[in-house]
Image 1 (cartoon, rainbow, N blue to C red):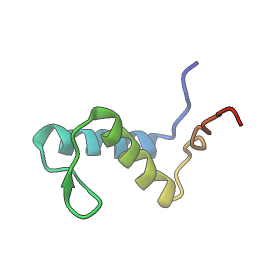
Image 2: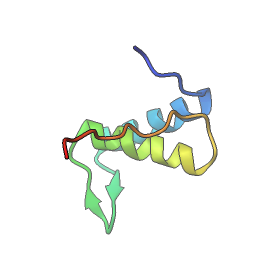
Image 3: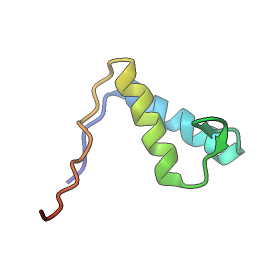
Amino acid sequence: MARKYSKKASKKVKRTMEEFKQGKLKSGRGGKVKSRKQAIAIGLSQARKEGDKVPKKAKKSGRK
């Protein structure tokens, strides 16, 4: 099932993906982002911080 994001959130993810493809996207203390999934997560995180409509993070379910 597809997730619903606001247009602003989609634009932020698109911008971060463009930075990733150009090799300009950094994470943490300047570490280079190497995976596509990590780039998308950074874009969604930035959108959440600015209050855009983004679904909550998926919870990991593990056995206890």
